[in-house]
Length: 268
View 1 (cartoon, rainbow, N blue to C red):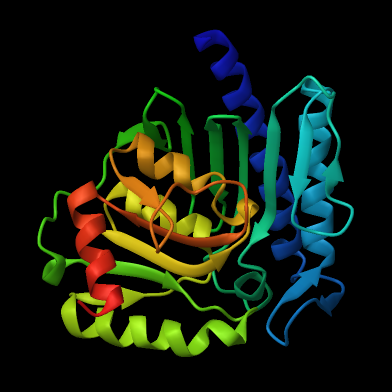
View 2 (cartoon, rainbow, N blue to C red; view 1 turned 180 degrees about the vertical axis):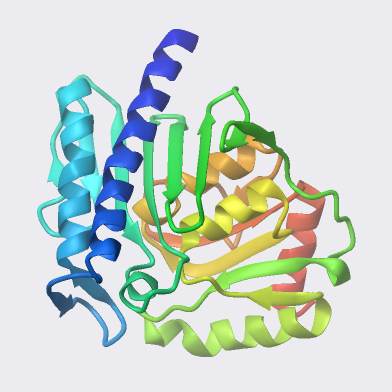
């Protein structure tokens, strides 16, 4: 099993690196050649997203032809063998808006899940010079060095990450209430615009916790494993495990802190 996990992790790392290579090449030539709007005025897809997705999927398909793939952009699905329960989650460019504006907080995120959850994951933020990796039972790492969640215990000292529900405006009123309460009862809130990086920051102890009202599985597929392998916990905001259905995500450095954060967001 350990050898198999190492193979899966190597694929995740290489696939994320292939996508990040596209990011770097596009950045060197001045960004994307075309941009289109998807679901909202701030929800973009570019030629860089599509090229990065193709590069990552090629790596996965070559190494694991029987595995299924679910990727963010159109055409990013591939059915696996019926008996194979492995599903790859690919976000080829998490933080497209950041990338298009020259903001360095963007990344490629690749993970593989089975029926029990995430198995292996890699997030590469080439503009930051960071590669975060994790394998089930093997810990989480940043640029090859083991990382752990923060030791912060008191919620009022927490630095939180968050994401705005810019694709689901109906969630804004409830979210703005959560943001108001979090700002009043913690040390502060930050928003990078890339959930994969936010969750990696929780894993590495830069952030003490994180929440977002709605994310797709490719948004958090890798980050969830980074957090849990670094000693943290992740659940839905309303409670329960994070699965492969789109929904809320909340993470913190301990189960106790997660419960405290849930109380803060709920106004208790």
